[in-house]
Length: 135
Image 1 (cartoon, rainbow, N blue to C red):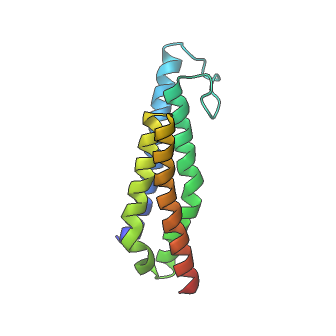
Image 2 (tube, rainbow, N blue to C red; image 1 turned 60 degrees about the vertical axis):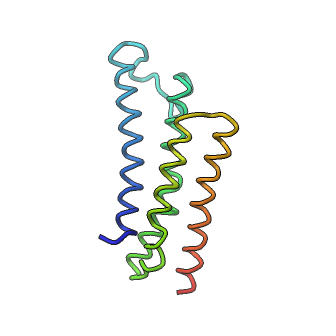
């Protein structure tokens, strides 16, 4: 499997892992009677700050997947993975780092670090798009 496809699988798996974690924690809240089964909203606004950050971290993954995953997939399908392979794992690492920072803190310093990780992804995405468009 190419680095591009491996990174795409990693990106999808990371988003799935965040979803599974959120649903396990939500299930615990339902089973312990702390929250009714219909008491959740997409942002977990009535839950702990961690659960709210988890919802946003997962949503951030889903927001980025069509863009970054689409570029990875397009490169592979167009037989241009030589464009995306060299930075594919860096993109995935930046995504995971962004999510982990998001889960850990909402402080101003954490927000800056999270944005830096996202900026890395955006820079890679713009670079890939330009290279793929010109290829």
